[in-house]
Length: 250
Ligand code: 5RP
Image (cartoon, rainbow, N blue to C red; front, side, top):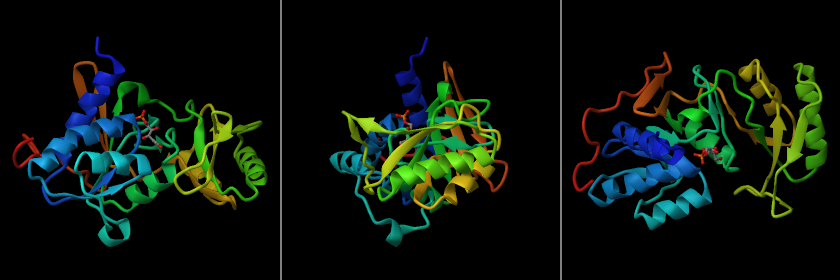
């Protein structure tokens, strides 16, 4: 039976079929996205030309180490494609992201892309979002008050007694690449992702949240022995090219 790491690798490998020479490409964050970069590196060193934008400092460091040159989003947008992982995805292509605290840049880059391909092992595909606590990125100034307002906004939508927990690492608050804090919000089951996304975005002090609604265009889900492609009905999702995406040396 395939383990999760093997499934991540299979999803990442399949996503290479969506990448072609000359593309402007957003590079996601997290362990699945790291595998995608590992597989992309030899293509680039073999001659594939890409203009890439990283969604986190960690991804940027990995890309440079692999010989993948990076550019500036402002200069390159709109990108052709972003490939990224997710913490949860449903069949309507709504996502929860931010387990790696990169959600704000991930969303900026994905929203600046014509397409977003999400790569994941099957454990990430859920009937309903919300078992994974939703990461919300909060400006440090007044963050406790902002957290309280998140709970109030959630209660207005029927999510009573929401646990809003500051994310810590080694006892200290996690700081994002943008210097903000993360609060993890245990919704349990999100009944209307679009309504919740709008409500969270309206809370002053919220820099961003991990609900991605209407952004992903294709899910590449690895099951044991099978890759499932789930595409958004409109606009047209990118079609993977047959055969290898590398011009040479891949
Ligand atoms: C980081 C993310 C990641 O894409 C998400 O956490 C999935 O990570 P992994 O591939 O390691 O399971 O959103 O902010």
